[in-house]
Length: 163
Image (cartoon, rainbow, N blue to C red):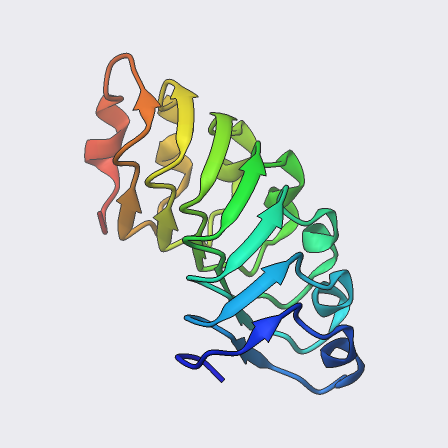
């Protein structure tokens, strides 16, 4: 369903498809919020809604997901901070949160040891990059450009074997 001109809100009824595994609504014209029921689907491994007009904070229901492998929320109008509850997504391998997020990078992200790709570019994030980044031993790519992150670059980043 990606790369179309679908508009309006993302239908709540999608959450009724209990065997749904992959939702790709990238590059449409959806607005509003993501239906919280999507995060409760037991087999949902990929949710991609990049390049729409979604708003609000990151969904609180995000922490309900038990099988999410890929989360793409890039280039919408999400605001607020990245919640610590994101660390409950133990199966997450790729996360894209390029939006208008503020605050610092939560320490909880560094407990997500399955992460291979972390996209946090083009936000308004501040603070420093903690040395705890060393815990992301599977990290292959990290994008932090166009933020207000400051301080020293942790030398621990040089010890990440796949980066």
